[in-house]
Image (cartoon, rainbow, N blue to C red; front, top):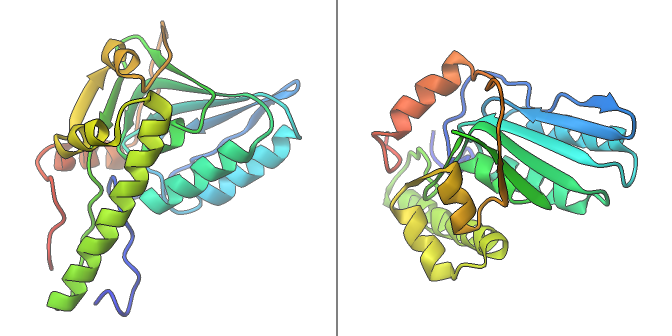
Length: 216
């Protein structure tokens, strides 16, 4: 199906099985939101419901173990978290890769678990159509990449040029490296990391080998 017939989904990861992105667990006035799988599907709606449960300025803990997903969904979730009046803390307990890193940039404080990792790369998509369609898809990727650069630069204090180079290389960070680069603020010990689904694990093996979208 051509891009004219169906709007492409910009991916910083691969959409696959359904995931429970936002599982609010009220504890007094605080709310915990878990992102333990691909960012896609009902993630934005689930997050909105979780934020509604937070009631005003209640603190939010965003716990992440995700290979990423749809950039547009991640940006929508980023915007919702940024608009929350209370303090937002992001905890990376296993992996924050690709679009999941956009989500964590919305937090007032980002904490990496010891031995957790972070990965940042350029957005990509799978596109079909003629040459005109492919040029339009490339332009869309450039615009998405520019927005991602701005989000990362605002958090880290690094220049847009430096961030662009990090994304171009598909850079993996240890917890220590993420803090040193400004993507995270602190490191903590976590006894056990939540496991990702089989679909998420399968995705990671694919993006390790694929740096650009395929053309059908």
